[in-house]
Image (cartoon, one colour):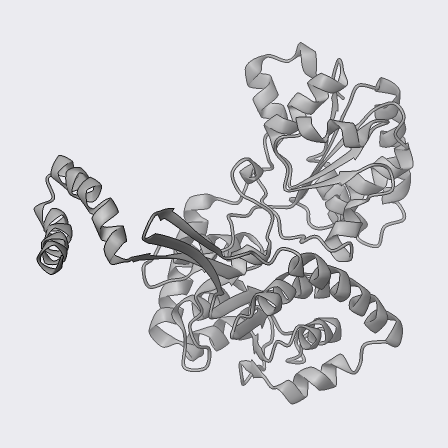
Length: 433
């Protein structure tokens, strides 16, 4: 247990430090080599890496719609119903985010507009690994569908049988995704960013992944010939803000639901109750023993922090400083605390709102900023799959009314051609009057 008030400023920073990432210099170099190989050799390089890491006998990158549907048919009716429930809620929540166009007369004769349009081609990255993630397919596929993106390109690593999880195929079918490619890792990001003989280039890439995927997204986003990305990302994390009224079993289960994501996940409890800390530690030990992913969660809990604050006000300050991806508030007056909670990717209010709800089926998006980026990045939403642009139209009267001010500003900046573009028009209008 960490007693917050007894720490120096430097010790507080260390207490909230994220788990160390892999050797960044070596990671950057390795990913740069993969990007270069895919950019130069296209499909050949993607297949080579995919055979090495995922599916030794893979012969083709594309999964046909027929193959998608055959895989989707293997999903049990019970799981299909659960996916349909989640799909409906996520779709409903993202449809409510559809923006309104703006049309405004700023000066008589001057009309300004703001309009929104869907991105044309989006890349959706779905991680492979030890657990299929149909939920992530929905979190990316649903807003892409609601926005109206013409091309939805899904990349996910195949298994040794050259297939993907049936649940992923079923969720992709629900989202109307027909372009599915059997590749993962940095090579998949490169293929979507630069294009290959089989995979056409996309405009923006979405989705979580391991350190190689994260680094690849960062690198392609910095290139003019690459692709935009949704947000910077790191290992997943949760902070539980709790007072003495919190249920220790609930808190422990929330910490562990984050820990089982991966060994580099981080779980933090911040409370003003020493008794709760003791009870939660005991509950964590008991629940860990029952988890199928015990070894992963145990490793992650080595990065766990149990922080004791002098008051809930101080605890809130700790949470704001950490800026967690997931913030769970288990306090008597949880909703009343919302105005004070400045930085979090997604907030779960009260004892009956586990992180699992947002991860799967409540309707909110589970693609969230990590590593403190919640201070300046937002959770994924519909607008991330759209772009806005502006329109302006001046009538003759609009030019007469606004032209002199434009010319004065152009003079002030020493831009003669800007001034002339208005001056010639005003002269023409005077000749016609």
